[in-house]
Length: 240
Image (spheres, rainbow, N blue to C red):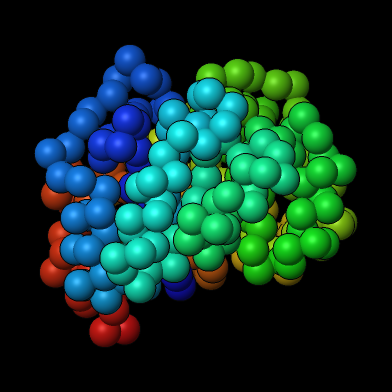
């Protein structure tokens, strides 16, 4: 299973939200680059970098953070947050992103997102499909829709989608455990998808359970920043 720590950024600072609530923001006293270097030093090869400013503004803001991490580490960076047009996408790749995850544009312009899968390749484009009570939310989770999660995934699955990052928003940052049943349902319905589970990871036991369930990858953040998953734990995972 791919182990992918996340780094969320607001105004260039390492930040975590709970359930996407910007009123529940916590800033950590360590730069995104320093966090990235710590991950790399302990066997991590890939990170998920989230531009929260970009997610809410509708266009990426923290390209400079992406450039720093890509320029000063050997990490493969999956970049997300506000990628809504070809210009955003090209700049993300030019700034050092190895791949991108996009969510909002896949709702508002399905043809454009589908064209990215074809033009840039299935390895480079991941769908972010984050839901609350089974319905997709967009714009940094600030806007609700009436779009069913499974119907949304199905549309792009039929068009060659390979990578999916999905979060049960009710569990994000709450440290209440991943949505195991949801991931099981997704894998059963879309057997060829590489699913990255995100949200709710509390500790190493949750990661082991996701691995046993056959999940392709796990993205976690708060459990690390709150000390529930340590750098030493990451060492053990790297050995495996």
